[in-house]
Image (cartoon, rainbow, N blue to C red; front, side, top):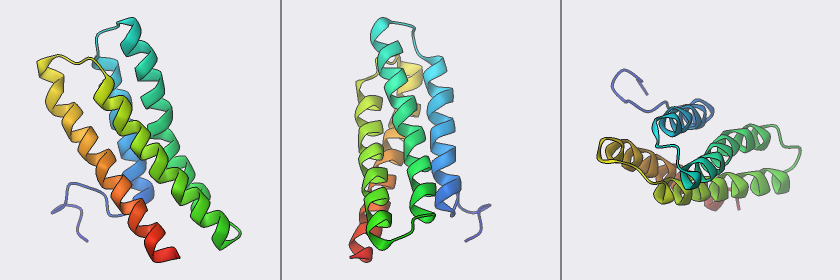
Length: 119
């Protein structure tokens, strides 16, 4: 797949890394309320965990371990989506939040598909 025609990286390691990076940039733009600081910490952790667990899945020693890691990827993507929705954003950040929620949803679906095809 030609990345110049598709804005999303084809490689899932690259895509999950880019998701985590985008989340970090987004969190820096938010109002520094107590809720946003705490929820921001959570979304930073969960978004990074998606990619970290995908790397672990690719290095797994057994099919059972691979499936477990992919389940964790899906869970962390779902958790990232939750925290993103919970953040208090102003109008200028709402479009970016929706894009990140969409990416988290797409990652959940991708990992769900990998799970279905791995059983």
